[in-house]
Figure 1: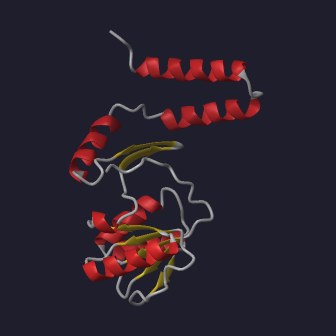
Figure 2: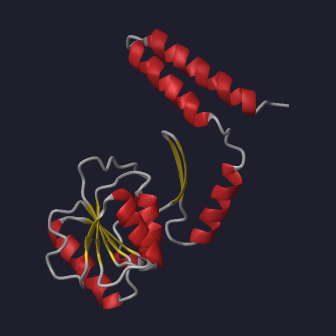
Figure 3: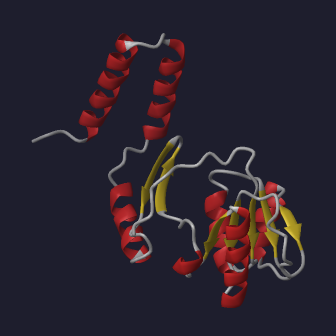
Length: 190
């Protein structure tokens, strides 16, 4: 079964990362593109995770994970190599209806982290549903090269126009025309 693609608004939704090593750092780096409401639980953290904590005022709990630590969180990321811990946390999440991601253990995941491109409000995600993260990564890199560098600014302009113009068919036609013109400028048909 494939994963359902969804873009989730993380505003006012707390996230916890269990683990403090390289993989935890990778997950935190991605999460920081979308939220700063992140708590890290780990008895040890590497320098990169420490830098993320300091720079972004993230909450750090310096100890091993304890049962119940997930209470109050919307998303749980288990970024630890301990398979028993991954299973335990996942089962707790299931009981409490909390979304869980256990790195490299698809059987303990409600969702996976896609490879993605983020330029301002534009986010494009690539996933193979865990079959080949490397393929998703290389496809992302190929597509990233053809996306216009100023697309984030163009989206800001469209957003302002959308907010100023009254709803209706005229607004829809104007915004559609602007978007089409912009894309055709970069991707001309030969």
